[in-house]
Structures are given as structure tokens and as C-alpha cells.
Length: 225
Ligand code: DX5
Ligand code: ZN
Image 1 (tube, helix red, strand yellow):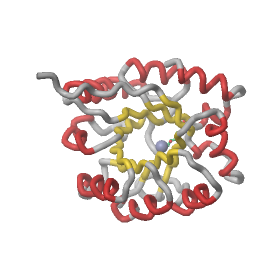
Image 2 (tube, rainbow, N blue to C red):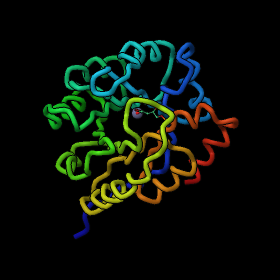
Image 3 (cartoon, rainbow, N blue to C red):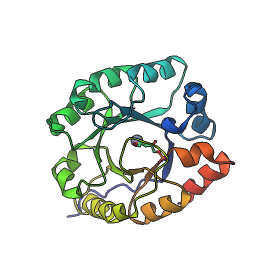
Image 4 (cartoon, rainbow, N blue to C red):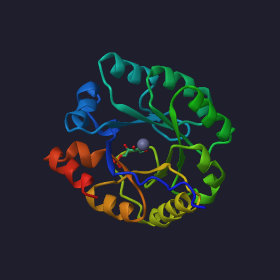
């Protein structure tokens, strides 16, 4: 008997709005869209789980009212994500990813996200081992491996996260699972190539995307990974 063959996801580049122009967020959100990039990464920080603040659900709602049809890849860096998933779902999130580190019922929160008609993801800080999320893998659409300590853009890629990607990609294969494997932090075409070799397929890029002199060429480099 053959098991269900796991899907091979084509590589996608996901611009992170954190590195956009905060005085013109709708314009920045549209930059990837103009290049045909269907996803937008939204970093939500609460000043507790990470020492920084960013956006709330109202930004997602405002972008939707402004006509955005992008897939909102919503990365909650919150101590109590279970309290906020409904607000982000109602505001227009497509995917909601929650960190495994805070103490709450992860499986129940993932199920709640699904019940709100969103896809769901689980996120690991650099210091959190892959085994922490192994029981949750059948429940998620996406696993996000942080390749920097979350909280700020513009940090250097942590190459020591590559074995974690390899482990998760191996589990995905042997368990016949289908989740996307996303990386976030210090991603550019060169570091993305290393992550791709280790099994990643979904590449969040903030600083490198928004600072690229030729964003079309930058996006084309990711399509070839
Ligand atoms: C960091 C955020 C990232 C951030 C990445 O906590 O999760 O999404 O935007 O920024 P760069 O690509 O500049 O490392
Ligand atoms: Zn992020």
C-alpha cells in the first residue's frame, strides 16, 4: 500500500510589511502584488512576547477595505494568541500562525483558527527544538521556522537553523504531511537557496525585498529556487 504522497510546494516569496513604509502601508502592501506575488506577511507584536509593537487587526481590515485580495499570512508574536485569533480572522487574515513557546492550549487554538475559516500555522523561535511541535504537525497548514530572534527586521540569518528545517522536512515526508515550511528572518536569494536545499518552500523577506534596487529581478530569483 502506498501512503498519500506529500505535495511538493513551489517556492514562494512573501514580502514582510514590517519593512515597508509605515506612512504608506497600502502602497507597500501592493508592491508584491504588482509583481504577481500572492502572499503578504503581517507581523503582529504585543510588546510582551517580543519587545516591540507593530500592527493590530484594524490594519488587515483597512487593507481589505482598500481592495487587497492578497493572502494575508499573519504571524502572531503574542503571549496570549488564543485571545486574538478571532479578531484577526474577522479582520481578513488568510493564515494565522501562532508561536509554540507561550503556555496555552496550542491544539485547541489551531482548531479554533480552522473553525474561523483560516489556515493555521505553528511557529518556532530559534531556541525552540523541532520536537516541541512534532505532535502538532498533523494539525497545521504551515510551519514557520524563525531564522532570527523575532521582534525586529534587518537581523542576520541564523544558519544554525538549517538542521531544524531538514528535520521538519524529513518528518513531513515520512509522515505523509503537506504543510508549507516557511522561513522568516534574514532571508535573501542566497540564504533562501540554503533553506530551499534544507526543505523550505515559503520565504518571508522584509528588508531585502523592500530595499532591492530591482524588485522584479529579486522576485524572479526566488521563483528559480
Ligand atoms: C521578525 C519578523 C519578520 C521580519 C523579517 O520578528 O517576524 O517577519 O519582517 O525581517 P527581515 O526580512 O528584515 O529579517
Ligand atoms: Zn514574521
